[in-house]
Image (cartoon, rainbow, N blue to C red; front, side, top):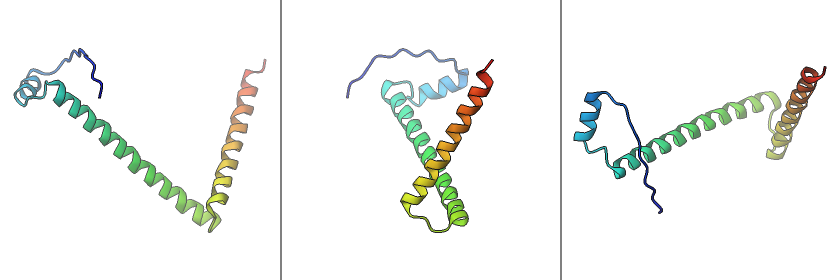
Amino acid sequence: MTTIDLNVKLRLPEDVEQKAREAGLFTGEKIGELITAEIERRRAEAATRLRDTMGKLSSFMQEEYGDLSEDEAEALLNQWINESDDESEAHLNSTTSP
């Protein structure tokens, strides 16, 4: 793995700085671990939101359209996207015309 030198200036409350220093958090290794953990936490959170959204979409599709094959569901979603794109383009054309 390639490493880079990076200088970071922080403005922290004095008590937070002291506790972080005592905990050994101001080393490149520790800061790298903290950043990596935060990136992973955010990815996991986004994946959970995506799974929840996909579950809701799946339930809606099931209720609204019954059992659809994957190809049918994809075609329906593509149709909605195309309709939305057409509406957006029409709106842009109507607002930019003199």
